[in-house]
Length: 73
Image (cartoon, rainbow, N blue to C red; front, side, top):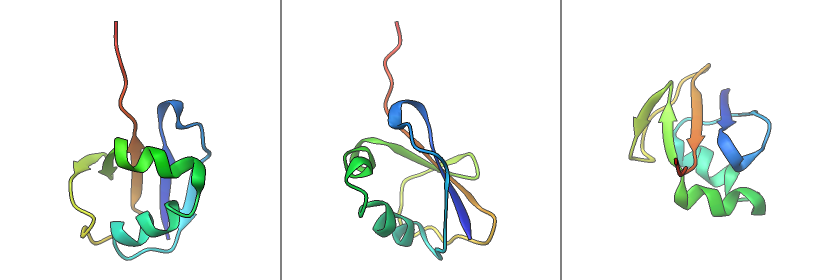
């Protein structure tokens, strides 16, 4: 089981998912219409390290973070 957290304006509570890879996580998250738009725009981190592939293997207890783009001023 992995934990997915949604940062910033995404505004969703963390969820736990059974997944072996980030591709598995993406399949689950794409079923949520509210999250779908964020998936294409957000950076992804596994255990606080940014990643750029959905082929990342996951293990029990991993934390996946969706980091939406932000603007500063």
